[in-house]
Length: 233
Image 1 (cartoon, rainbow, N blue to C red):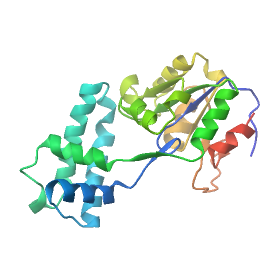
Image 2 (image 1 turned 90 degrees about the vertical axis):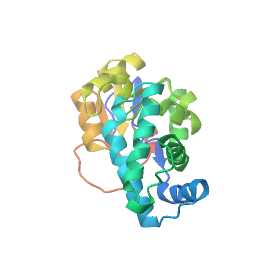
Image 3 (image 1 turned 60 degrees about the horizontal axis):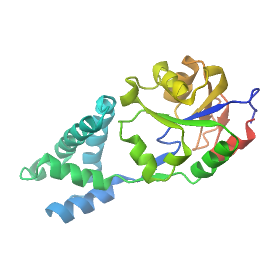
């Protein structure tokens, strides 16, 4: 692995796939639907419903810039989930709010084991740390629940920034939060399209986090774990 040829002052990090991961929600959704509404669905049926919800969420998350927007997004995503259930078991008697509660109870984010140690070491080194992610404005709450919000100097979401990666505007917002120029920052993320291309467009040095160890020659500084960040400088 090559090393950086400069000493960064700020570390920007993606969230999903870099700091946090989503526990497969299908099994949790099956339990929630059974416990709350007495509805039994198969594993495949739950997966189809979850896929419908995720697809809707990804298309609309950037518009949820405040608490009201997040609440509205949850209600609409719950209806997308309902549409993904078998036609004869779409719970017409259940309100959007009730279904949204079941949906949210099915979503469980966990921290990657290498995330907290890496953030702790980076802070001790004096780096400014900002999470920058395509997410609705509830991301700070998610990061707080998994225990890393206190390690960060800021959180920039696509919803709050009004721009989604790879748009360089969201990276510029992160730089402003960190108080550094593009030349003084690196950005770490797991997506070549969103993180690497977006950082480059903003003039920031990208680092690709290849957790799957694909070994692909992406023409970019690559790490397999956040633990490797200590070896970059």
